[in-house]
Amino acid sequence: MDSLTQIVLGAAVGEAVLGKKVGSRAMLWGAVAGTIPDLDVLVRLFTDDITATAMHRGISHSLFFAIAMAPILGWLVNKIHRKRDIGVKPWAWLFFWSLVTHPLLDMHTNWGTQFFWPFNYRIAYNNIFVADPVYTVPFLIFTLIALFMKRTNPKRAKINRIGLIVSSSYMFLTILFKWVSFNSFEKQLEKDKIEYVNLDTNPAPLNAILWCANVETKNGFRLGYYSFFDSKPIQFSDEIPKNHHLIRPYLKQKKIQQLIQISAGNYIVEEISPDTLHFIDVRFGQMSFDPNDRAFMWRYELTPVSENRVKVKRVSRSPKDMNMGKLFNDLWVRMWGN
Image 1 (cartoon, rainbow, N blue to C red):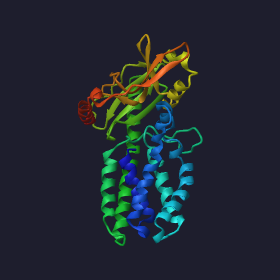
Image 2 (image 1 turned 90 degrees about the horizontal axis):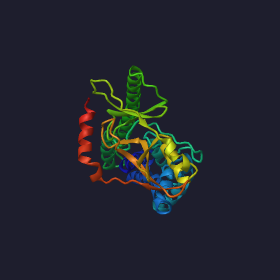
Image 3 (image 1 turned 90 degrees about the vertical axis):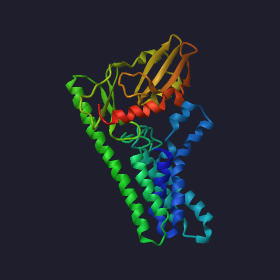
Image 4 (image 1 turned 45 degrees about the vertical axis):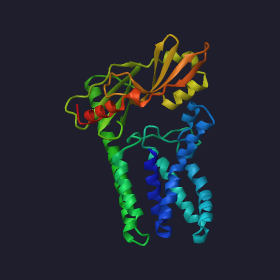
């Protein structure tokens, strides 16, 4: 999830664990702990973009990391607040729960986490977009209300608890929404007699009303959108060829292996020119809500440099390229039905 959401979750968890003993310090250190796992982005300072992307939400988002770091951070913070020495163990519990709930929340996004690192297995439930204001805003409001209450006020813990319950309840709803949308896509595919290998659904940006389907067929992918306010049948795109054969000569190259791992196999290859290929991760969607639009968001440029090697470069898109105003307007319109 986005950084603000993780800060709010960390603060609320910190308050729940230690708020009665140390007051707002619990929220402060919970918020700090909520940001620590995402510091793995600093790996980009020491390695290339693709390797850093492959490592994102790895060890720092694992159960191992929470268990290892909690006593260290607990000891450090207890030293900082030595005038109010409550012992290392309570602080360690605060850091453990604030650190471990971060990846547990991230599991619900389409990127997921390697929670059981060092095992190379990524858990991604894909039921909430990386930023969802319906999840974050009410949670933030309840946390701020609790923050400005006195530690001795019995309503402080109650308000904080309500924030956790409301956010968790919405998360449960998104799981239910995913199930409903999955069934709707599945029924339409059956009606259209479309044979497929795998069906994956994910929410459109900033909401849980509009859902996208990535339908993997034997030779390609089909895309479709479904809103709970739709009144017409779901329309799937024409089959987009996988074209995996285009990168066959380069499969032994580490960068290509990393890209395939990052995409979890959900990729297509486009031949842009005789000297340029694009590797596209279809999970991260398009820059429109027309299923037949081929303007995909997440792509890498591959330029052959020899028979079995390519130069790999991320294709960056600026807000001007994406026309964000039109994109948000199209999202709003499509969200309310077809």
